[in-house]
Figure 1 (spheres, rainbow, N blue to C red):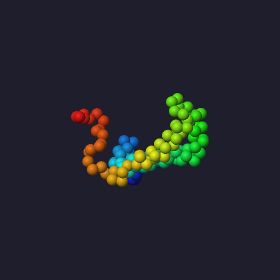
Figure 2 (figure 1 turned 180 degrees about the vertical axis):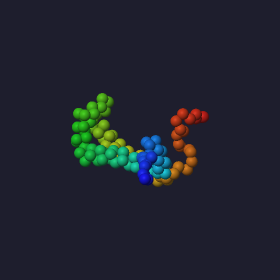
Figure 3 (figure 1 turned 90 degrees about the horizontal axis):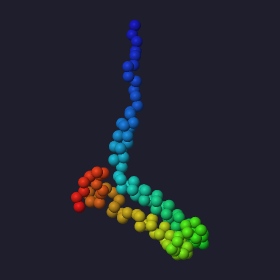
Figure 4 (figure 1 turned 90 degrees about the vertical axis):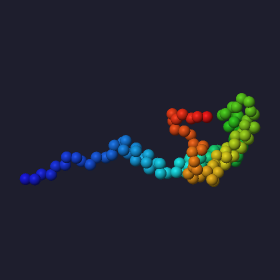
Amino acid sequence: MTSLTLDHEPSMPSLVDRLAALRATARRFPLSLLEFGMRLAVGATFFRSGMNKYQSFDTAITLFRDEYRLPLLPPEIAAYMGTTVELWLPKAAEPPAAAIGPPAGRAGRLPPDGADVAV
C-alpha cells in the first residue's frame, strides 16, 4: 500500500523576505517622482487654505485675531501675510522642471547615516 504524505507544506515568505522584496521594488521607483508627489500634496493643502482666506478675508482676520493671537502683529497684517505666503508657497515649493528625473551625480545628496563627511 502506497500513501502520499507531505513532509513540507508550501509556506508564505517570512516578513524579512517580504520587506526585502518591497525594498527592491521601491528602489526601481524614481525618488524624484515620489518627492514631487509629496510636494504637490503639501502645496495643494497650503493653496486651498490661502484661497479660503482670500475668498473670505474678514474671516481670516477674525481667525488671526481670536484663534492665533499673535503678540507682535496686528491681525490685519498677519492675515495678509499668511494669505500671501499660503498662496505663494506652493509655487515656490515646486522643483524646477530640470530637477524632475534621476539626479545627475552625487552632488546635493546627503551622506548615509553614520558616514564621515570631510568639509
